[in-house]
Length: 263
Picture 1 (cartoon, rainbow, N blue to C red):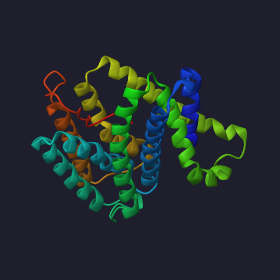
Picture 2 (tube, rainbow, N blue to C red):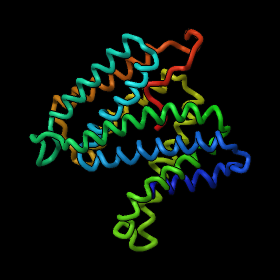
Picture 3 (cartoon, rainbow, N blue to C red):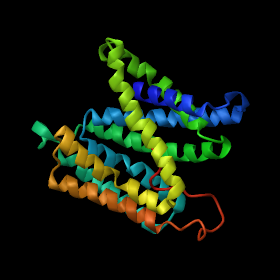
Picture 4 (tube, helix red, strand yellow):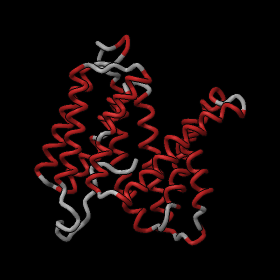
């Protein structure tokens, strides 16, 4: 809640959108966009409280992969989704980390990651829609603020223990800056300089980055089978991204969603 609220306030100060010019359909689209962002972030944080970071990220990637397969109806995307689904089963049965490395993963944590992936797919669809009806980056700032408000009932209970003095807000401000404000800004800048395929391939490496930082910073050691499953999810995402037809090659019709999108 604090992370999204801090990032939203920073973006609002930077972008300063003219909200008075928004009409009811635009507000409805932005509110839906914020709701999907709240679900995606809320369930993801709930999942990494129970299962390793890299496992949660790999499971979450099933959402965008399934969306790509549903919208494109290509055999290769179906194969990629099947490979990812099999990998998720391996990840689920592989076990946790630390003292519980031999025990099965927390099923609730796995469920939260799957729900986060579903919200990620919905976020992609809502993000594409909001980008066509609301000019500029104002929708992103307002969407973040909406998501923070929606998460408030779940975050407010822990606020007293987390923030006992004004100085305690500094770490949360840094998290908002480093995990939302800067990444979103850099990703939007990258999208302007890279084609969709290059961007999708680079973003597909997210589970690998999660595995690396989970190991280095959180002492989360994955079993060989889990590492292989994470690699399969990455490969499935890359294959689906690279095999997608370019805009100039695509037949007329509704646009397909990218496998990996700004999150």
